[in-house]
Image (cartoon, rainbow, N blue to C red; front, top):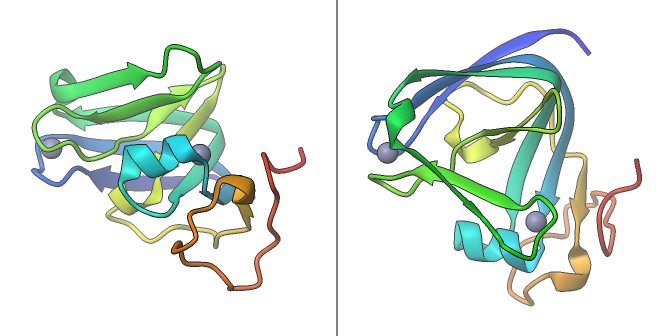
Length: 137
Ligand SMILES: [Zn+2]
Ligand SMILES: [Zn+2]
């Protein structure tokens, strides 16, 4: 994959960001944590690796909530409007909640994961590969 630069922002516009890196994965996650954090049937997350996240404005508004018992599930969001925001994790991976992007995503969703936790009303049926838990590496 080629290097790409994407811009995004939150609902109130206070937080703006830019991410640069190589798009690797784009996954719909149906796990219960993603459902709670998004208020929807699944999260749609784009992963850049290597990736670099730069806050262009509003970094002081960015809040993070880590689920205490989770290994790494952290919800990053705008403290004013509550919109989900990207997060740098591991050494060099950036996870972007795709709905926060102002640019079009450079790749299409590849799979649905944690279908074992899928809500009965959640959308689906688009023929994407589906995994009961995390996607195979
Ligand atoms: Zn905001
Ligand atoms: Zn999830």
